[in-house]
Length: 141
Image (cartoon, rainbow, N blue to C red; front, side, top):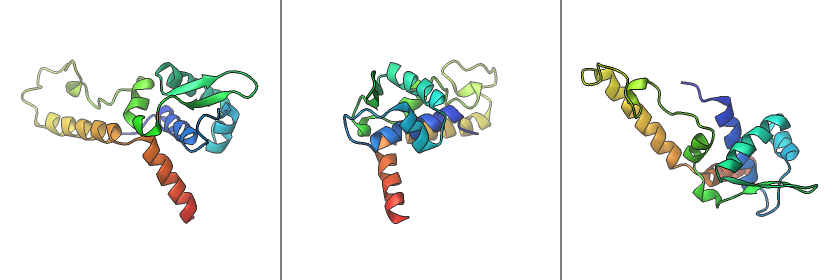
């Protein structure tokens, strides 16, 4: 399983906002430069994050983005949901199972366990935790 690029980049962009002064808008170009991404792509991701209520957009010459919530209240699962990316690895684990073997398939238990573990980890990991980890890595390096 490979995480979609948009998830990885959105997490990095939101963590970048977490690591800056509270309330000071960070311009898209600064987020993009700090994270090695294109400004156009960061803008697209931030628009999705804004629609989901995770970040606030601040227009104008000194505009940019800030977090809309405390960083400890933004989980990686929230970012997944904002980007409308499914965690479902196989159709039989989703909310509308599409397999007639669902009650006869032992492999489904493994896929369901994997799904449950992934969802729990994403729900229990905040961008605040990732920002702290990144600061610690910078301080140690």
